[in-house]
Length: 230
Image (cartoon, rainbow, N blue to C red):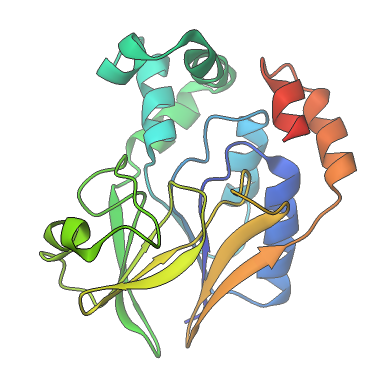
């Protein structure tokens, strides 16, 4: 089975369209959306594009999705109460764009997904770490800090995201891969994603950034200009 890991889309429809075109050209057989489709400037369009794919798509809940869902339900989480206004604003706006249908859909997204992939064996997909959706670590974080988090995992491979930085590293005997971000990659411009089966490929897709920025500026997203600029 050929699996595409798409993480941290953040409502960036032009980036998602470019990656989906590659996924279709390469005849991927499964898509794992690894959290944080939301918030972002084109949330409805991104969700609908993923739902319209003719191959199976499995969503995972990210911390951004979780916060948007809470606002759709008029819940103030601990994060929301302590967050700065510029962080809360995109969450509130995104929640207002979505419908009851989207609320029901997001509410059933699991925290993790396990798949058996030919050539790789059992793979666990999560958003940040198997422990929660907010842990932050990089390719240089010490094994000493990470071993307690990953020691309880049975799978030999874990795929994560959250930090928007692609990497492929070992934690003890476990291979841990960060798929990077489709919509807001850290560092170079474009869109990052992951191809699995039978091997592992960290992928990068270029797209028309000028046209994408123009489309984003045409939305009513409260931070559209800043998002487009970055």
